[in-house]
Amino acid sequence: MPDETKPVSSDDAVDRRKFFAKLGLGSLTIAAAGTAAFAYQFLEPNVLYEPSPVVNAGKPDRYPLDSVTLDVNSGIYIIHSQEGYFSLSAVCTHLGCLTAWKPELNLIACPCHGSKFERDGKKIEGPAPRPLPWKRIWLNDDGDLLVDRSTDVPPLQRDSFVRV
Ligand code: FES
Image 1 (cartoon, protein in one colour):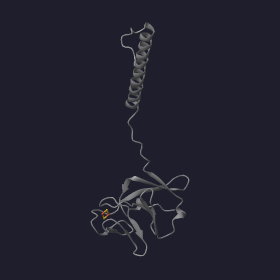
Image 2 (cartoon, rainbow, N blue to C red; image 1 turned 60 degrees about the vertical axis):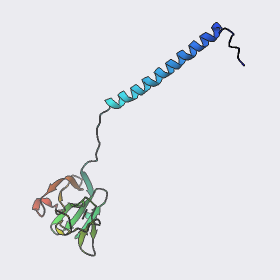
Image 3 (cartoon, rainbow, N blue to C red; image 1 turned 180 degrees about the vertical axis):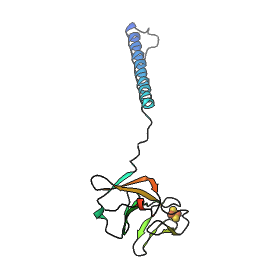
Image 4 (cartoon, protein in one colour; image 1 turned 30 degrees about the horizontal axis):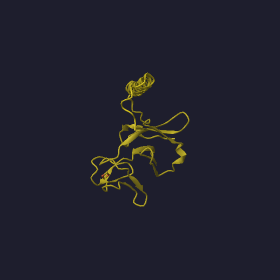
């Protein structure tokens, strides 16, 4: 049992003082590190990096005549028709589900609420309020088909097709 009547020696007092000094210094270091982390986060640009809306769909010969090809990753169809190549958005105009090409029915169908579209995007039936929009398509210098998902073009217009 410690003797409480014994006076505290000056060595003990110095050790205690050093301990509290180190404790204070440690607390300040942690607070400074936290402040620096918040300052870095504050100064960093708050930018949302989105993928480019332009999709490289590859060489036209990948798409046989009369084919409808869904690119699941970019949400577009590449259609090779008698008039040329054109592109449709594969995103349903009802609530945004990804549609699917049904070759046995010769139509594009939405699995969510049953909207159906022709291969040129026209609505056949279902709750979708609009047809599937046509997207701008062109050939680049390397002969690849490019599709700009952010740009709608008028359907069935001469400039909306790519002819190779
Ligand atoms: S999301 Fe396609 S029919 Fe509802």
